[in-house]
Amino acid sequence: MASTLSSNPSPLTPYRLRPSSGATSLTPAGSTSTTTAILPLPRHSPSSVLHLHHSEDPLIFQIGTRNLQAGYPSEPHPRCILPWTNPEFWKRSGDLWGLGMWYSPTGTSSTSRGELWHNPETVEDVLERGVRVAYNKYLLLDSKTRRIVLLVKTEVDVGVLSKVVKSLFVHFQMPAVMLLQEPVMSVVGGGVRSGVVLDVGWSETVVNVVYEMRVVGTGKRSRRGGRTYRDFWRRLLKEEASPLDDKDDDEGIADWEVEEVLSRTGWCKPFSHANQHDDDAEITIPLTTTTPPKTLTIPFPKLSIPAEQAFFAPTTTPSPSPNYPDDDDYALPELLYRALRDSPIDVRAAVMQRIIVVGGGSYVPGLKKRVVDEVRSLVSSRGWDRAGKRIVRKKDKGKMKEEEEGYQWRKDTIAEQVNDSSDAGDKADGTTGRGRIAGVESFGSWVGASLVAGMKVRGTIEVEREKFLAAVAAGGTGLPLDV
Image 1 (cartoon, rainbow, N blue to C red):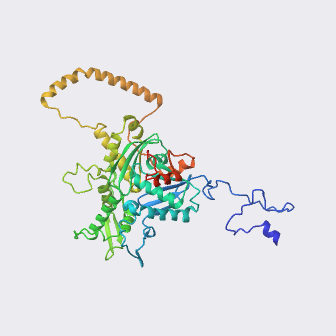
Image 2: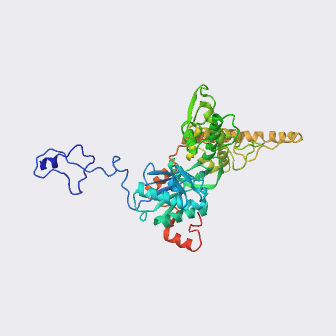
Image 3: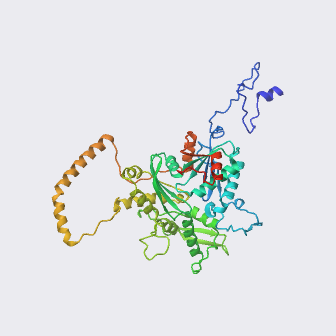
């Protein structure tokens, strides 16, 4: 019986046995059994663990306004995505907790819970709880032995970044933190070296131009983002639920229910109106957090109005001059066009065919294509001139006409030479479509950082724990001057 059990393992065993490195078979040397040997699984088999990580491999953290992403390098997705809306991250001393109710005399309101950067005083505490959950429940590693790769915004506040790094060093004692820029990693996630990145975040939208893996100039921002999109959706649902009620009551529908509705039913109209949807189609939306619960019936084309108002309208606030919005309230296509227009010519020629739209707000169906199409329309109508055409008076028209006729022969000759040379160059190298506006799909900044960390690439900015704590104790920020 013993020999039978050793030579014929049960097929119901829920795992595969791994023999030691010196053993090649479970069958004794003198046995004549024909049972095949149980061989170890391949090292990089996808059926086992995704990768066997070495002790020197860093961990990748992306700390956003709404969630925390953490995982290992060379993996296609993070191991965990922890939303900051978890109430466990926001409990403080003195809060009354239980029975689904929460009273916080310490000042954390329901609107601030869920946004990490809303209150600078609670950043360190909330971040420490989120990172500890990631380590203890998902990563399952000792934090003292692994460096981490931290993805940061290009224009992050130095004081906030110093608080984040200090919280990681003090509470988890990792040896070093390597800082990588999110726009650069988004370009890497798209498989290119240059591009213009439109990051549609929660509280704002930022455009950065990346040329040869470096950010060029300062980014342009707009206050339009995911929160603006949610506010317009709340307004639409409130109008449909109580069209005769003019009172601005934002507490009627819960935030989580508004986000659930917009993630399931929200969409964006195409720039070309050739494909019109059937106006008779209607969507039924039940609302459970209103008093009493209601069921709304909304036409399908009307579900695209919040995206139109939040991302493409001339202004998001009532204004007597909507065609002249504030500098921080530009629509997404206008913001992207201005970033391309203000870039150097050689940089613009390299990135205008690589428009990358990332961020939580970019997942609205049809948003990416609509942005690229509108930018293409702006370029064709305005060109790349920063100043408009000057107004010519009538008495100057005759003089200008004579000058234009005098130089007309020279202009025609130069144009013919340029066209001949450009045609010959295009035939020689086979390049077509240069100067056109196009988009590139990217896997995101976290996947780009996973690729970079998996190739053992060291970042230009790496903060060591001992040096950082010594600099902070001396009264400094602890960060390099080029951050």
